Length: 338
Image (cartoon, rainbow, N blue to C red):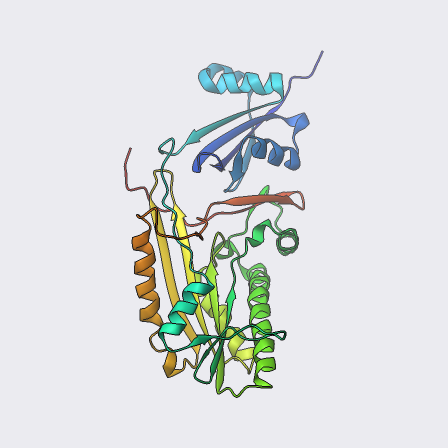
């Protein structure tokens, strides 16, 4: 006599990559066919991203039969096909329209610096900084990088969380603690420190043949994985205090865009300066705010000439070290109640 199949119920929050909405998901799977990799492969094949803790329990066949309805249908499907997948979507429109938000880039900050009396430094065969105002040199570094799609970064994160043996692991920085959080911060800081170190090298080389009074860096933090601005600021403050004598000031700018399933959109802009900001740059905050207003006003004009847009923040997950890792952005409350 064949042993009765044991069906596991897997419960998690998933993000539908096609409809771009969050769902409560239930996967029923034959225990003999269960593995963490299999779990990840099935969820991915359905077009979902894991974005919560995964909970697993064993179902009792007779109780499922007594309940009947969709539960029983899903159970029978799992027995017959090896698994069944059910999702319950948050309230949403089937095809919400999203406005594209113009992205801040180097040319925008060149405009601002020129307004403040600066100029672009012509490129030469040797490395040069980007801008000059009187005798102040500035290098701009754009940190836009979808790092969680990078295999090396994923491998590094996997090692940081190797002691966590959960089915799914939350890799949002705010969720980490203790030594894990410290190690995670070092990984984040290293990419910023490398950008500042490269800028310092360019400025030192430029100063060999040019007279300069002080030097700084503009760091532009935009895109899909734009770093939390306060964490970004804290890391830059530590780098400036500890790791460089060439760079006297750093202007940081963060742009983040959030969408939800009913079409609401929010664009956040934050700016700060760390170190000794020269008086020639005192107008940087107001100049940037003016440009933000101009760019946001252009959103509603299809012929505004913009060609570069900010990727909104959506969840991401990947598999490594026999675990599912997930990152998800801030959720914004819908403006429409269903």
